[in-house]
Amino acid sequence: MYDLLLDEPAVPADFWSWRLWAACRQADRDLFFSPDGERGSAKRRRERAAKAICATCLVRESCAAYAVSSHERYGVWGGLSEHERELIWRDEETRAAS
Image (cartoon, rainbow, N blue to C red; front, side, top):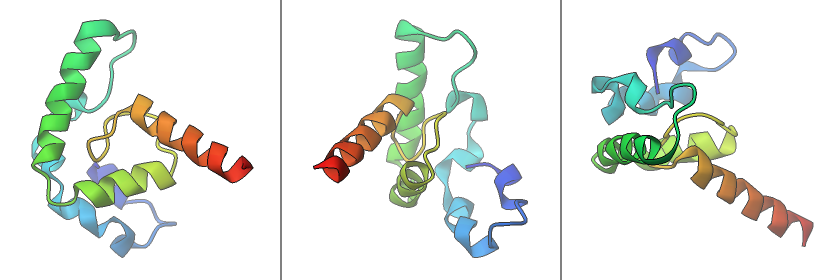
């Protein structure tokens, strides 16, 4: 999501190219990541605001796919919250165990 990740030497630049089109590049990064101790309605409001930006994003699906495949633990990525990604991972684990 953020420019720091583009500087990662072990990852080819084209891996991150979708990020150049991300709607979140123009938004406050704090909107996408929970401050320490945030819970309840404050967290839900912040996540809704972040997801509203994701809903307008041209690369939302690439972002969500990255977050799921990379097991990104924190923040809203591609319109998916931490909890929503956790549910996806649990479902994948359940299917793999079947």
